[in-house]
Image (cartoon, rainbow, N blue to C red; front, side):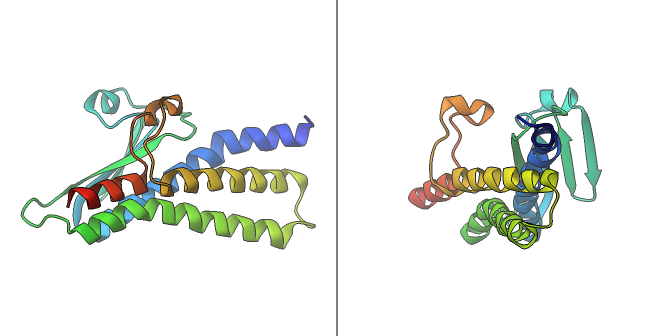
Length: 176
């Protein structure tokens, strides 16, 4: 492996991969806020529970959005929770919108990244080209594993046993 690719890989692992996960979760969170959620929490690097909140690396809060970063160098694990007014529950359409907003953000980022790759292919330095290609590849995977209806296998770590975003939508439709 050449040095430039090694630095590109390191940058992608430490900065880009957690950032793309955070943006995916922001998609869910912003949709929830738009659908009248009172408060949203984005959890990075650990499951949503009080124990993880207490041992978190840091917590950022701004108005009705809170980000709890459980493990500072969590590469790809993220989820979000929201609290809404019990007197005005979310409609099924709002719930579907919230669940599909994360994959929509991933798809948008993928299209943007591929556009950047094609528009700067000959002029971008090798470091930037490598980071963009790694980002595009991980966005394809992120989009696929969230838009395909599935229950995540155990080897996916903290996600093991959970339903994908589309899996939750389909399960909810079956329950209605």
